[in-house]
Image (cartoon, rainbow, N blue to C red; front, side, top):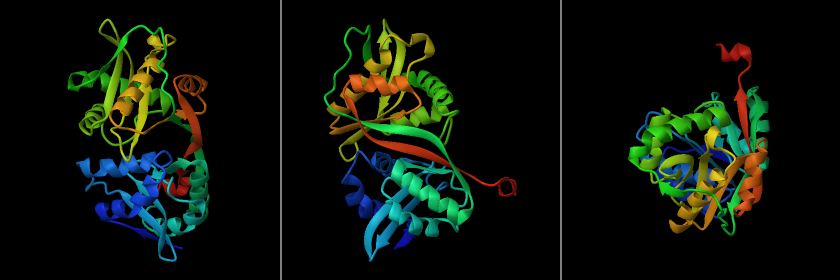
Length: 289
């Protein structure tokens, strides 16, 4: 097998579409990333990683990364990991981590550690759910409303609070406000659940890509929890995605959070596969160099 790094986004997207679109649920992160890249104003300053792997001249795997995020390896079978590592290691020693279905992510992480000497540890165990029959919760006070630019400050505040609670801090480029504005600009729908005009919960749904829409983040401030608002706003976001043309509506949960893993099946989501985020850490003497 041999790996190749690409610079031409259009060429890479065309090349990998058959592989990724064959299973849009499994490859939802990679498909979303490739859709967002042409709309990112700083893509030239922070070029993506676009990697393909071939077996006997035939495409066998693909991976993509939007700096500063992790390498998405859902399209990189474990047997392709070695070739991917060999082409990445000389120029991407600062790779922060990898994310994908457990088998692919762990396979890549093992080869990366063996090749580079960089340690790997599990950052978050996840479960990927896909929507079956949508069943909105009954008896929840309030109603949904789609947010717009006038809600930017609230969306930024809740994005910051969600990140602090769920992932230990904001991820990705820019401030929370810049991320919230950029999300709206690329067609992501932010649904607010309101009671008498007061927002009490938020869920976002990406514009459909290859018939797939991803739900997240989902956030309810602590003072409003325990009333079903999170379930209700998630169902509203899923309904928006279906109306926007999504055949597949997916979301990720943190397996360490029993609440989210319990509530989503009640509104129609079913588990599909487990995924994992794995972080890479330089040894102290190399990290300080």
